[in-house]
Amino acid sequence: MMMNIKATSMKLCLCAGAILLSSPLMAQSVKPQNNIIHSKQADNSGMSNCHYTTVGFFHVLQENIVQKDKQSVAAMVKYPLWVQLNGKQIQIKDQQQFVEHYDAVITPKIEKIVQDQKIKTLLSTYRGMAFGNGEIWFSNACQDKAQKDSKMVRMQIIGINNFM
Image 1 (cartoon, rainbow, N blue to C red):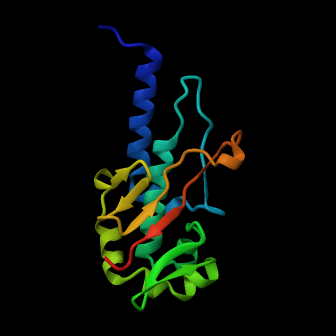
Image 2 (image 1 turned 120 degrees about the horizontal axis):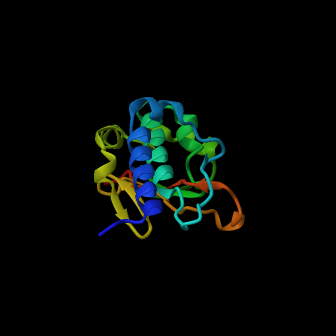
């Protein structure tokens, strides 16, 4: 059975992109600005670059946490964010508050989970993707609803379960 040339080309591009974006050099060179990782718009086949963005976001988040780059991690969070501090749930309202509580939110246990995580073993559900057993969740929505015609993909941390 002969495959459609366009479909075959698309599959090859997706594989090449996944390999390129999963390399350590790419992980260090991609930095989000204002929680947005730039991406091309969907092509004529209707496929978007959601896979690329998930891979890029994963590596950037992983690198920022391993490097303890508090400001960069804080810039990747969707606010408000509920976390547990000193045995009670609190709402972190903004980046400044996140940075102030960073060491209590991103615990050594979470750092280790993030450092050891492989992209192929991410937990994935209809709500998003997660490191470990759900310690850090991020949204894999491919389009910001407020910017339907945007060429950008918005990915953000939507949950941190630092009490597990």
